[in-house]
Image (tube, rainbow, N blue to C red; front, side):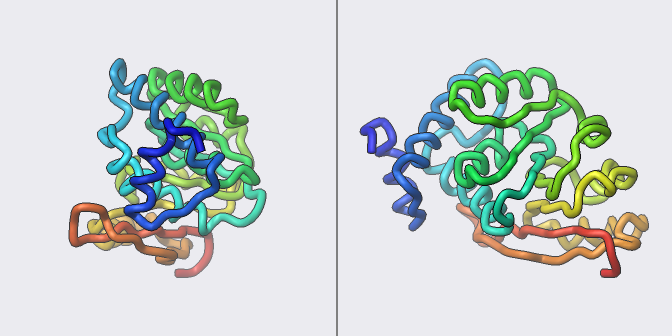
Length: 215
């Protein structure tokens, strides 16, 4: 392993995360590219390896463990590239695309993807427009919007994908209640797939799956 990746490897060891050396090195390159862009554009608050591992990498691994081999995946509102770009590093078998409606963020992520030599299309559009042309298996979303709003965006587009995986914090139960109250979960099946401790708190992150069908 290159010495430049050693600080990341040490942070991962503290969180008991093991990955191949080549992935650790690529993740370290991703962090450096992201943090360089972050000096010009607000992409992330996780600007050291400990925060990156405890939040971004842990969250991305939650998604990665629920994706089947060779799935076609779209990251909705990728921001600085989490989870989409990180998934492309962790799971090179996946066909990953990312989108963000904020053009500056999309351009930054496109540059990061190019620096890492990853095959990850970047759409500078909101997800509704992307889904007019994109077809695939799974949408992934983290820290994008309340569940009710995401479901409203996606309602006309379920023919373009099979399921939504969305990562939420402790407020997910209230968000589910709001979505039910407004009828956005009618004809939908919501399942809790996995949980992970939320670093620095006594709460946990919850990975939800939403598909069409009775709840």
